[in-house]
Image (cartoon, rainbow, N blue to C red; front, side, top):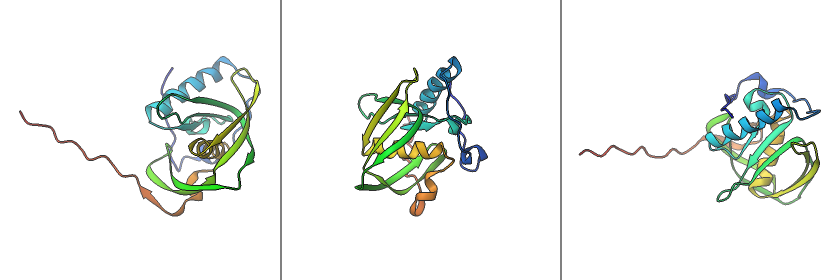
Length: 166
């Protein structure tokens, strides 16, 4: 397990279409572990392989706020979206310090493969639906900034705590 370098907006790798995964190797398993470690370290809820410089169709997501809820999506394909939408602030580990309002489906259904190359269907609503859409777009070389309604904003920062003098 290791932290990988996150690629930032402007890096050409983020604009490329990723290749499908034909089989899961030890290298792929290691990549997935590293992606989770990198995502958790950066306090993200999703990460796509191109964000760490790997042009493979792999996504990791964990939107669990109180309990971990990790998902590995290999070769994901969104097969259904709701007509009902949600609009809200969205950010990206590849665009640090920024966010913007994006409209996404309220619910999505994605077909993908797990680490044993077993096909499965994942249905998500709310934040999970947003994360699935956002990460799957990375696999096609698209960033959320192209969907921002209005201006891209600076993330509010935590006020720095002053050291207490003794």
